[in-house]
Amino acid sequence: KGLGMSTVVRQMLKHRNFGLFTFVSALQVFECTFEKNFLSIFIDVLMSDVSKHTRSIIISTSFILPWIVTIFLTPAVTRFGVRTVITCAFCLKVGLSIIALLVGHDRPLFIGAFAVMTRVFTECVCRLGPLVLSDLVDEDKVLHSRART
Image 1 (cartoon, rainbow, N blue to C red):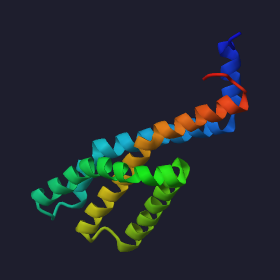
Image 2 (tube, one colour; image 1 turned 180 degrees about the vertical axis):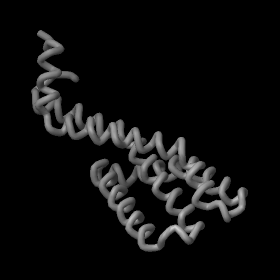
Image 3 (cartoon, rainbow, N blue to C red; image 1 turned 180 degrees about the horizontal axis):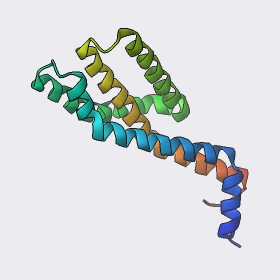
């Protein structure tokens, strides 16, 4: 006999990891979308004294590099797990932010590199999101002894 929808929803709402995943996933999707849509504006404003060609290279790189880095991260995800890789990416973003705060906004090429690196880490985490969801589904399957999910 299958479970009713209300039972499954009640079980999910009681599950701490589901609530945490939902909250973090919403923030992550917002950050990915925000960076994707406004990066070029930020680059134009913060790097106005850098040539338009250099700014276009920075923006182009920020759209291509996440795909390449995600491919290279696949062995790390296999070896260490998705949680460890995402945690390391988050720690790197925090570290980069601290360095950017110390360096200041008067070094435009550093700002460009910082923008590209933070976008790469953010997009990689967004691309690893389905793996986190599959881990959550597997955990729910084990916790509630479901034959299938």
